[in-house]
Image (cartoon, rainbow, N blue to C red):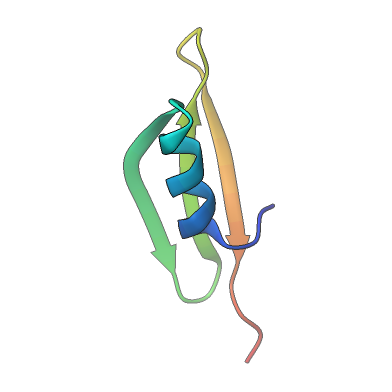
Length: 52
């Protein structure tokens, strides 16, 4: 779980992390994105949806 997904992904990319171009944004569930570790494994990042 993360806050500020867009800023986090930008910062990770600037640090040289392999950030997946795939980002999913679901109004009900929130944002999902992935970074790739050195062994090629996807690490899930999730920013919960804003409460209505």
